[in-house]
Picture 1: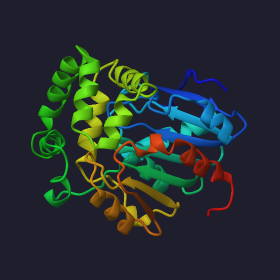
Picture 2: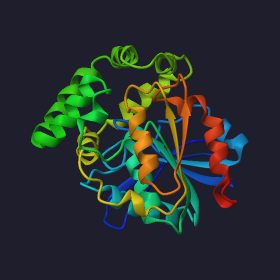
Picture 3: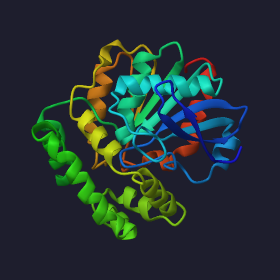
Length: 293
């Protein structure tokens, strides 16, 4: 199956855009992109999914790429995932995601225990209010979190201004992001085979504006709307010990809050570790219809 953009009309009239790649008869895995990203945010070699026997589905979250914007909560996002799975005739599936996509993954795990067999999050956030967890983040990330909590009306103008500035030179934006990242992330962001993917994902993610990204930031900074302690779906957390975007403390907190959750720490790796472990993640997802190991 070759990657290609598709879409469905949701029950409330919104359009949801997604891609499929890999093995059309393989075990289904739904992947959630991060903030400012899109359905293109995946390893560019789709043959990896085909060889792994995985039917990989990546969707644009509301307000990203081709998906219509709406003020949807994380719990609402689980309803969108159900409609997409129904449209694709998928009864049970695994879900994974990173960074700003991880609360959506966990909301699906919480809301859909009969549909979601297992969930994996990486570079994850956590629903915390205290500065003891954010002080290790870059200054701009701390600034956005603080703004979301104290002056939410300023968040959209800030994101819009950043979009205008970044869009003038996406290559310079990517190189600037690399300078503020962990060494392993620097290598991944600028790697010849991955760099075009990052640029295409960001370009597509903000093609219709930044409402989706701004709304996601506001959601992340608030209570998430569901109790992590009630999650019954097996949750796996993969976290780079050198992640400078979302500190390891977040992952350890999630492990403690989610019953039975497992945490795998990757020494020397950063926020983008899934790209270095893409085949391993897909093989994890391939077990979606099989017994949990």
